[in-house]
Structure formats: C-alpha cells, structure tokens
Length: 124
Image 1 (cartoon, rainbow, N blue to C red):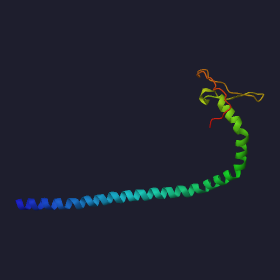
Image 2: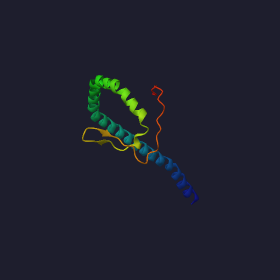
Image 3: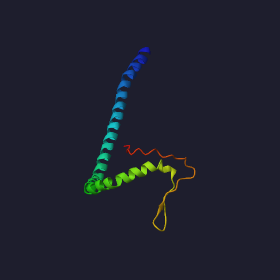
Image 4: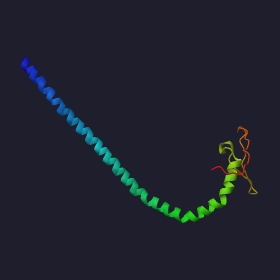
C-alpha cells in the first residue's frame, strides 16, 4: 500500500511542474496578444491622425511670417501688460462697453498688489 501511495505522490509531483509550465505559457501568450493588440490600435490611431498633423504642419508653415510679425509688433505691448498685472486669477472677466471700451476689474477679494519698480529691464 505504501508503494502505491509513494508512486502516486511521485507522479503527482512530476506532473505539477508540467502543468505550471502550461499556465506560464498561456499567460505569456495572453500578454503577447495584448501587446500586439495595443500595437495595432496605435498604428490605426496614427494612420487616422497623420493627415490632420500634416495639414496642421502645412498651415503653421504658411502662417509663420505673420506670426513672426505679430510677435515683433505685439511683444513689447504684451510684456508691458504682464508687468502691470500680477495674476490674472485676481481679475474679473472683461466687460465690453457700447462705445468699444473694455474694462477689466480687479476682484474685490483679491490681495493688494504693489507693482514692481520699473528698472527698464525685461525679465525673460
């Protein structure tokens, strides 16, 4: 009887690693399939987005001279505005008056702001 129990135990122990290997290969195959699916999804997305990216690049190349001119003309004015404003979150939404004026009011609960001294230098 002991021989039968020992034989059964030996067979059981020898089969367990083989079953574990099958499970490992199934898990590995599952990850490989998921990885391949993710690659296929990314390829599909890239093929869908590529024409839009190409069109955007062409549009930006066409607009480059106008954007450069805008930066040259408006750069100093925007820099001056940023020196006069501390944080845009401290201001209400702009009000457009019938005569064309635009008023941007400071919020009542905003902290008191003291402008920095004007040294004539622009900090970048």
